[in-house]
Length: 236
Picture 1 (spheres, helix red, strand yellow):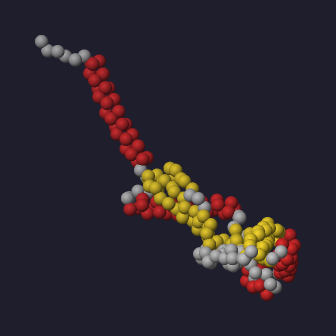
Picture 2 (picture 1 turned 135 degrees about the vertical axis):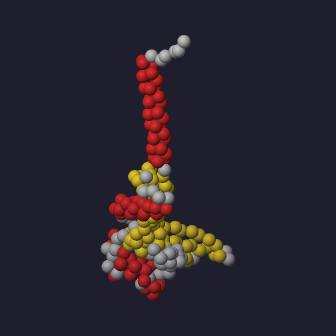
Picture 3 (picture 1 turned 120 degrees about the vertical axis):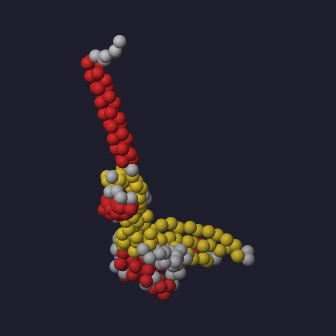
């Protein structure tokens, strides 16, 4: 006796088979899309910019030693007047120079008491050219009888970093995209959108290297600002 399938069973089988085929295609296509979405490249972008410092500070240390405290103090007071005159003649306003501390020490040399008075004054100015001129002419202080202690050096600072940060981050990101483009070209792909990005820290260093330290020439107003970003780009 022959067993014939009913038309309803045949239709159901056809629908089931079609569903399995469609489901398998969708799963395969989904896996392909997921694989493509997972393709990415990690690159670093660099941005550098030469800037000029906008703040100069110079802590000047000087001292005098004598057998009695009053004589040592009188010598330091004389040097203080000469230092103020020096900067006044260079065109600095009176408030550009401020006292930064004083120290008195006593010691004995062959049984004789001696006193050393050490004083510090700090110059703070945004006039960078005038500050450089002061450093170049600091030997005039020696002619006035003022001997600066070693380490009394001008320090230059760039304080406007926040003003250039956005543009530099954009430059670094552009540089990273160019690097990603080369990777993509080599692998037969194209660069897509950014998957994630990390901004590196900004560094500010001397543009031409440290000038050597001490005696008023320990820093330079010419700086180089640098930032490196790490960016992950999708590949498509």
